[in-house]
Length: 85
Image 1: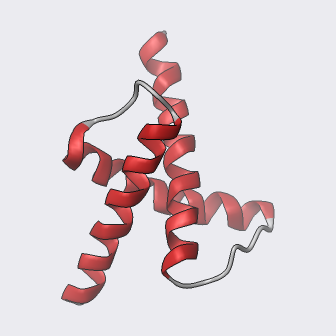
Image 2 (image 1 turned 180 degrees about the vertical axis):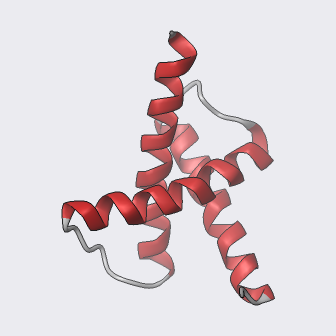
C-alpha cells in the first residue's frame, strides 16, 4: 500500500513527465490532469521498457522522472499513431 508521501511523489513525477513529454512530442498534450495520467502510465512503461532493454538510469527522483519521461514519450507516440489512423 502506498503512503501519502509516495502518492504525492507519484503525482509530481507524473506531472513533470507528462508535461515534458507533451513538450517533446508536440501536439499531443492532454491538459494538466491528462498529462499527469500520461506521466504516471509512462512511468510504468518506462520502467518496464528500460528493464527489458537492460538500461539502468539509476535510482532516486531524477532517475524516476527520466524513466517516466521516456515512457510518456513512447505512450504519446503510440497514441499519435492511433489518432492519425
